[in-house]
Image 1: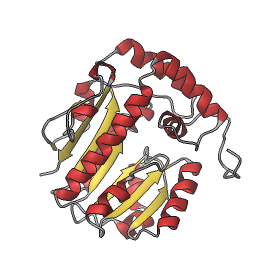
Image 2: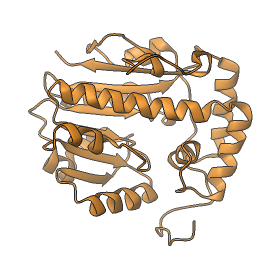
Image 3: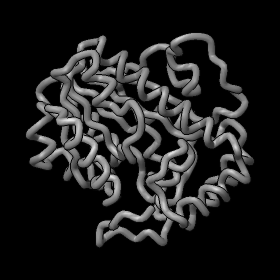
Length: 265
């Protein structure tokens, strides 16, 4: 990449958002990201498949939620913009849908804002904040300007909670669940150590030198993140199996990522 970088961006330390972009075949990554990603791919070449399947899960979940009447989305740890982002999927069905993207990586903010400016999408905003501080996110004026917490919303935590190993997930998800009005939904995807633990833990080790070390979790730990929400059918399943659009073609032996959607009564 040759374009100028934000002054507070350390391009010499790999960042998961940019590694994920590399897995998806994107170009918004640096040498440190590619080097770390290649080390992970050497252990688990299926990471590219996992990234694609995770992205497809997000898109299916958004379509389901818009069809269910949700018109506002809070996407935490949104990552770098790629094809078919939350606002694109949602606003294609319901143009009035409002979306707030939250991320702590400066380059994510730069690219996301450029994307939104070029598309002139209404009701969409990008906020720089850290998922480890949910209270600050919930109180952020730009979040409050777009999201009405008295009405149902969808909170998205898609492939992000594994990057906060130093905190109990309940410290993050609990305040977010509490802030959601009845009829709201919580979307989570998370790598699991229940499947292919040798590869999962091997990949986690390669992330220890990245900006956000990763930790896989069990299905029971992921279920606990939903608290007393109703977990919708088909439950907590491999991302490829969550309401697929057609026959599942992915090799499920390689999909060690769970996905689920919960509803607040």
